[in-house]
Length: 442
Image 1 (cartoon, one colour):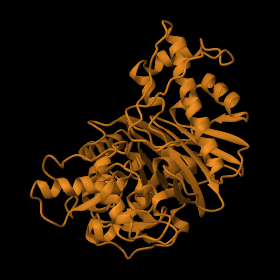
Image 2: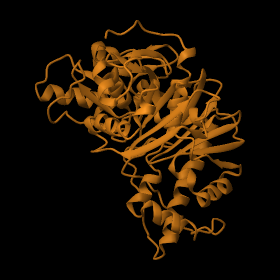
Image 3: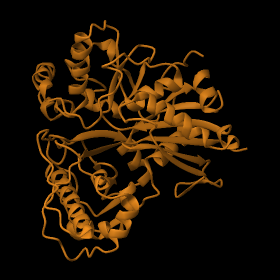
């Protein structure tokens, strides 16, 4: 039987799994993977046990005949969701048993961030770690809370995907580079920004590996819980947005819009860009610049379920604007195209017509996207020829028409190109990649 490759996406609202066969085999094409599954977290996004248990339950729904053919697995996570844990991955007692989510700003840490990054060469102020909405601010809050509660030294700081990757390996030493940019990892230098390691403690930070690195086989305990072969290999994953880019397979001149709970814009560039709220990553050997808004399709579910959104969308006339100006943030604070933790949502006035209100919300999201692409262009990104849309919102044809009209370029929807699929593609590429670390102990 041919080998299979598993990709897991830890998104804002739940987990998604994609299973790919070898290229050329049935179930090996990106648009027609062998299997796709999704499920909500069995708990809050902030609860690491919900990530682990959600993965166990997701794999339990996969036929054993498929699970036993798994050769490699890769995981992505929400970029910036951070927790403190013991060196063996064990969670801490309250109030530190939960992670701080990607959208939580820690404005009280701004002074501490300046003190840490002030030791770095010029340009640090534009680094994603400099923002009060970044992981460095959350790390400083977690460590401050640990000191206040009397927890001793020796804690680890791990992002969502890295913590679950540690459970798969039975070893929490590692961290994937993209997930740690907002914590202070400098992709260009291949090291932590000066001051970060000293300020947080070098032992608290992960040993960084690049996306796609082969880390070793599943730990016996994880293999047993997931029903996967003991020799199934763990591949360093990526962030959820970068995983979606891998799945979208963009060409020259393409921008990628991830229309999920939040709106994420990504674009390949010749060299890293600098700007508030902006992040740069290395994906498939190329520089990828972009930003994530706190607005997104998640705000729509505060008012309508998916079935109602589909029904109301059919009543929308994209060429007849509502004239309303809404700012559909999911909560207070914005990251991109402006970096403002105090920015308030504008969700009123609400028209009597639900279809008109949905259209106004989609118009607000479209305006944020247009401002985001404009911001990237101002910072040096090449002009766009088209936009590829992935994520749940990529199923909405009326929204696509609004966006194409506002941007003045073609917009393509590829809802089947999920972040989980991107991770499955990364896992499948594993045999062609060098092992970057020594074999892990059994």
